[in-house]
Each structure stands twice: as C-alpha cells, then as structure tokens.
Length: 136
Image (cartoon, rainbow, N blue to C red; front, side, top):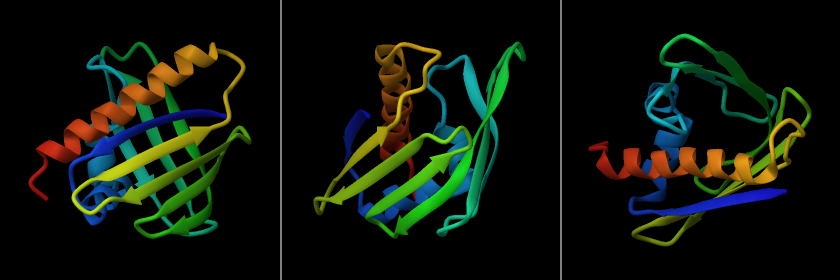
C-alpha cells in the first residue's frame, strides 16, 4: 500500500464534514490548479457509494473516481473499495486542536508508485489548505 498524510489545523468535526460533503469535495479534490472536480456525490454509509468526476479544466480529459464504502466510523475512519477493486483506508486521528489524516491505498499498475504518491499527496495538501482557509 501507498500512504500519504498531513496534519490539519482544525477540529475533527470540521475535517470530517469538509472531507465527506459533496459541496466541499468539489472545491478541494484536485492535485493541480489545471484540474477540478465538477461533480461529486456521496452516500456515506457501509454499502453506500461515492462518485466524483475529476477533469482537466481545458476539457481535454476526465475520469470518474468511484467506489463503495466497507467501513465508516464517524470522525475516525473510512474504508472503501474502488470500482477497480483496489482498497483505501483513511484514518482521522483527533489530536484536539488538529487532526492527522493518513490515507493508505493499493497502487494501480498504470503509473509509478512515486507518481501515485505525489498525486494523492497533492490532493491531501490541497484539502489541508481548503480546510484551514474555510470559515465553516
């Protein structure tokens, strides 16, 4: 598995809300400024499904990121199986005035593990920036 992590200066309740609510996912779920997430839906429960469309802003490319939840523990952890069968686990470690988010995932075979780690880390870094600048 590949692991990325970041410490976010916010309450675990705020981190959880901004991580899971589609209206927020569309605002932070991109690895670079030339990409965005114009669509997101999320049924956050065991057996529930999620889907987000990630797209190049110039319209040259897009793909759907989707899967099904296998475990959901509010403000603590999320596990899911992606549509391609890979597994992901996200741990939200409440540290009082900040939250350590650790995301581990099975690599795919198309891109190098280093490139995958860079992309997922960039998205997590963007999430940190979004949360810390949000007034929610």
